[in-house]
Image 1 (cartoon, rainbow, N blue to C red):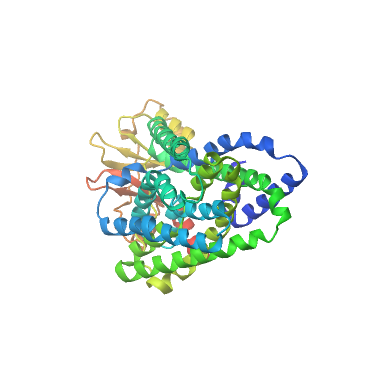
Image 2 (spheres, one colour):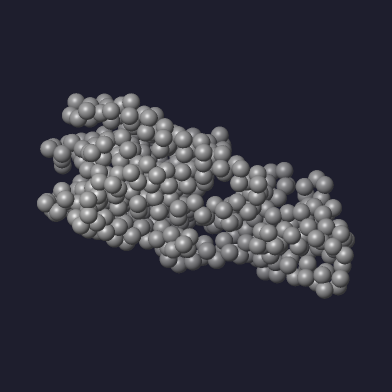
Length: 449
């Protein structure tokens, strides 16, 4: 099931239109009213998993204040006003659809901000912070902006919006962070990064598809009576995303370096449509499905536009600098200590489904590595299970730092015939790992650009 969801996540541009058609058909054939009961569960299914992987600790890291400030100024001044005036112009007699356009513009950045920034070889650390800041600031300002800009046209349930933001943003944020901490405490950072972290985004995708299905089913009769409505919604969305890309690209290109500029583009163009959908469907009652319709269509445009923009980043911002280990490494290292035993090593390899680990001394410094082959050789030689790892023959460790060029890391791998690099932090303590899997994945992504 997880593999199916992962494939769907990679093909949202196809999956969402299919779900929209299925929802439309279901709403025409059956009474969609009972589906309203699924809105809250689907909302939680959509938002909570994305919060588990959110790296809140990145907020306190400095070094890119300028790009963070400019990004959020764009996100909460120019772009919402652009969406507001575009909504008034395109939907003068449909204020709830205009509200949907505004709502999407008020909730910037999503997990895809980080993903697309990485694919375009932008500043991923900055993208992570943009995601966190955008979520927190958007949660506070969204009700205020909606009331101030749309309050004279339609009745805005401020108390209900604040309540729903607590339910669909703050509560999942808190629970997600607690879940992340518990998983890391229970299984370790390396296991979390390798096996647990990839589970959550596909689950969130299932919630997205469910909400889109429900929204389309509830609007089916209205759409069937006026099918041209979909075209009238897509055109303003194309204009909004086009202007958004243009403004962000100009600011990013002429005021920032390549990495920060790309992060700024994806930190402003990628909207958190999942949370916008959740708020629309839970805070606005019967009109929620009308608001959600334009947000659902925005998914199609956003994913496609982001994918195409990656292909042009080198032309816009110039060629990417040399890839470093820091662009690919994963946080967390599987390790045991010299005082641990052969039995403990067998247990670690079995439980974590890994092929090697680092052996540390009492000062957390790496003394060497042990691989599955080494353990099997020891077992074949009938080495007692209580034998300390210090008595086994350890393999040399390939070390690097986050700033080490990838080419240099590959050369070290080749010289030693060891295809795993241990990344040292500022205190020379193993903190991250780079394996052949990340390198192959990176190379495949570059071929697909």
